[in-house]
Length: 335
Image (tube, rainbow, N blue to C red; front, side, top):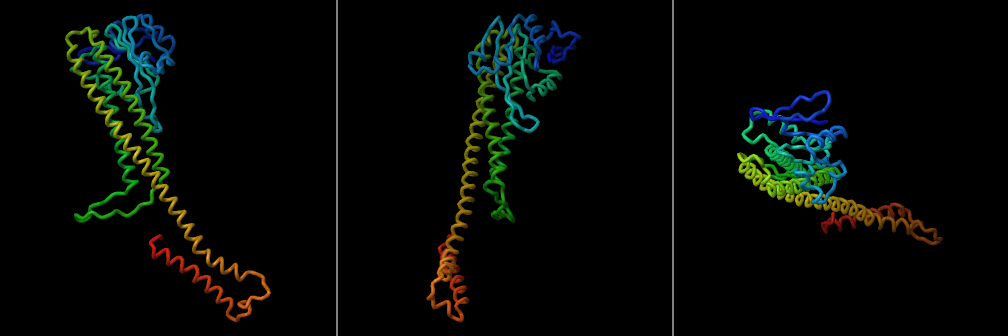
């Protein structure tokens, strides 16, 4: 799908599309979402550039993501979104600047794009040209990334409370909250999902940081002299925001790793407790089993078999032999 946007009265406006897709002469932004071969050919013919294919977008080398060709600057970053099932989806998005016109190529739907379009439909104080829209789009992406990391931090905090429990203040005195039964497998799944998301978000921030650094390096191509200083200042702010968010993502990754180790430790403790119960049960029932085995032997001469109270004596001996180890373990604090 090819969507063209223009600028009027300091607002972003969507230009009407005709029956055959064409490039309006006054457009400042062309947004290609899962473009067809025909739409790519139209853009290539109108702007004189070579649109990278989906396979070329996935190239990981920095030289393949950031380059200049045919008078245009090509920049690709991995943008992340949460899908319908709340799973992280990461896909490359290419930003192209040619003659102060922005072209975006994407094969998924980051929430930052419609959010920016909705906001840009109102009067803006920033430049409504290709470079200004690109910077504004990246600002929207960074704002969305901050929201995602904030939500991930909240989920990590909730998981931490479930893992370690919480203390409540009652009448000004902190008392230990009642121990709750937690599903450790569910905790591991939650930790794994958030760890995967934070890892992809950090990768996305690194790729956006490369774009911003590349934009600063080619800032002399910002032809609108009225907004060059403003754009450069916004780029520097973007760089600082990316650094701070990357540090926060690193902090969350460390916290998630700690939580994962803690939950695995709790699982080990739980397993050790179960094994301990079986071990104690085996030791407690071992002496009664020995007594029963002795009096179950089929020797001809066994005086106890002729006793009138031999059976109660054997039962009592088995009970006592089971109680004594139990009391010993209890006294040692092993139970």
